[in-house]
Length: 315
Image (cartoon, rainbow, N blue to C red):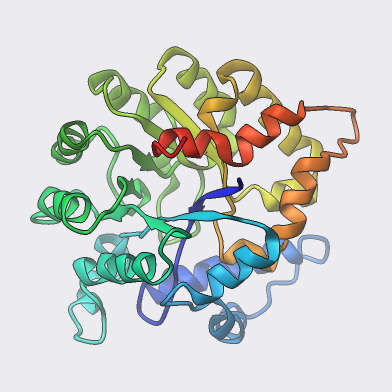
């Protein structure tokens, strides 16, 4: 079974336009790195938005079918306290509770294929209550935090969320690694997750993206904290630029943590513009490493699905 442990739903007003535009600008810089040309980020975003937007999960499930992905974990993002909270009070913008409900409705619409965590900024009034409601009443599987909105994972505001996760025995996924403006990557270095892993040893924390450029730090910390896992979502660009950069990072994580704490993810839908999910899975399964890095078939299958199945109690 293949499980995408890290994917999102984007739709009109689901997230701040400033973040979407900055993400488009980052994509242009990556695609045009040889020429150095900047391009027009707003034009690119307006061009891709109709394909990107998927409020019901229908496009996502169709893409899963075409690439052989059996289940996907949806992760709502809440970054508006930094990006555009004044505009978020406009009635055209969904509240964070409405956004989480949209994810729940997609899960219900595609029962057995889509599952979702709760995503809420811990600094919001009633954040822990929304998290509890999401798990206990709506069937959400855990919590997603995005500290790049302006807080550290070990900020005291986060601790009621971790207490709730401990009480409900559900995992917490914390974004780690770089992010486009206006989000702040300084808050997402893996070392800031270490303190909460120490304070809440009963809670399973997942370092999202394995910290990207900080992957060695992420793995080093996890090697000392058995309640830390990681996912390798959103590594398609690294793979396309330098396959062995990805394979070396994955090899490093598997060697130090074993396969059961290392999970596959796409960070879709945005990354499918660089590499479709079928090709991404094929690249991992066949792992044609230029320098000869290899993985056992058993470990690859655990990475692609077994580890997530165990994390969510499906095995």
